[in-house]
Amino acid sequence: MKTALVTGGSGGIGAAICRRLASEGYFVYINYNSSKEKAENLASEIGGQTICFDVSDNSAVKIAIESISDIDLLVNNAGVSEIELFTSIKQENSDRILDINLKGTLNCARAILPPMINKKSGNIINISSMWGQCGASCEVDYSASKAGIIGFTKALAKEVAPSGIRVNCIAPGFIMTEMNSRFSKEDLELIREDIPLGIFGEPRHIADAVAFLASDQAEYITGQVLAVNGGMVI
Ligand code: NAP
Image (cartoon, rainbow, N blue to C red; front, side, top):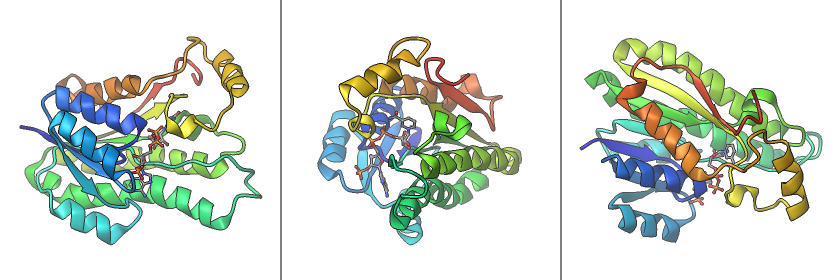
């Protein structure tokens, strides 16, 4: 049985990815940081296992990942955002965004790669954002973290391709989850008008893209950014 580790598996997109991978036959390790109950309910639902660690804490990541050897697929999905002017955001919040979104992605990949390199196979999928592709006003730190994930994906893909490991990235558009619960009904309507397909994304749209990139149908695809955004950024 193939195994997958999904960081932020307790959240909206992460949970959809866990469910989809389980339906594809993966045994799924569901990472969470604070949402224990959500992660445990999901684990009972899909027959997976929860694993608690903060992706930004490098030693915790190493210890946790060493305890679950032989992972075939890592989905770096954990992430946080904040809407604030670049010149007004608190330094600690800026650090938190970069530490979780970008350094957390690097931490998990670095911890999981040695056994993948030894067995000459593996798959890493990083969740970026359309804002990492084109930038968002008032989400400058977030955009920088997500653009960093794109650069990381491309560089790592080149480095580990000779070891039979593929590394790709998904750049979601506006997906209806807790992360976007701060928007008012009026804001949401304005945003929807900017989406050419005219509807908000759902977590399952990202889960479908993960399932594709993880599958053998994508065996010749590495170092790419797959935009799943209803045409919002083309
Ligand atoms: P969400 O529902 O708020 O979920 C965020 C997840 O990240 C939660 O499972 C949370 O776990 C986890 N997380 C946060 N800090 C963590 C840490 N330090 N260590 C481990 N896990 C941590 O958000 P979402 O919409 O599903 O977002 C998932 C990913 O998609 C993020 O990377 C986000 O940037 C990206 N994305 C989302 C959208 C969108 O429109 N929703 C668009 C583009 C990209 P706990 O709750 O257990 O702490």
